[in-house]
Amino acid sequence: MGKHGIILFGHGARDPRWAEPFERLAAKLRAMRGDPVSLAFLELMTPDLPGAIAAQAADGCKAITVVPVFFGQGGHVRRDLPQIVEQCRVANPNVAIHCATAVGEDEAVLDAVAGYCLRQG
Amino acid sequence: MGKHGIILFGHGARDPRWAEPFERLAAKLRAMRGDPVSLAFLELMTPDLPGAIAAQAADGCKAITVVPVFFGQGGHVRRDLPQIVEQCRVANPNVAIHCATAVGEDEAVLDAVAGYCLRQG
Image: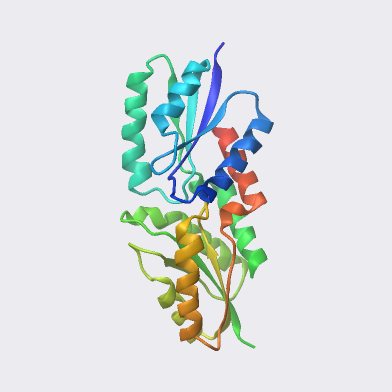
């Protein structure tokens, strides 16, 4: 039975400190599950999504869930990401690649953000 | 005694659907408190932050908390935002403008995102 990887997909930025919450998030998930958890970026940071998927496939993942760590779903999530995922499916025909909805659409995430906002008031 | 406004500051995008989680977040906060809650964007969407702050000041806010609704803190949050906030302080000398850390740095927000990721696996 193959492993089931999770890839946290973010936009990327020039400032390396930008990635800190993504690294903390990956560390949290690794503490919660044994299968691979890695990061991938649309631009300005590495690895990109094809690279991250190839690495998890080489590591024995037969299923990979890509989670867009974005608040809003604009062109990057609605247009760029499906195109990249489709290329990855062609390049990795033996891996079932599932793409989740952006985290900012989740009610519990929004509740946590609202709680944070109230604590700043 | 003046009102205390909250402004949710996001990047902005071309696709109007991008703003949906921000609107849901603002609605949640309005249900939790009586004072003004509004949105502001760095680019591509309106209002911008100076416009949102001027509107809350005109509405009677004597204190305003700006919450960057970003996961990572890169150039937009570390460089652009403080410059805009400083201009807003000069333009609104009678309003105490406080700027929070980006929501993605908050432990409870990251825990909620991690929970979402696990539910997708």
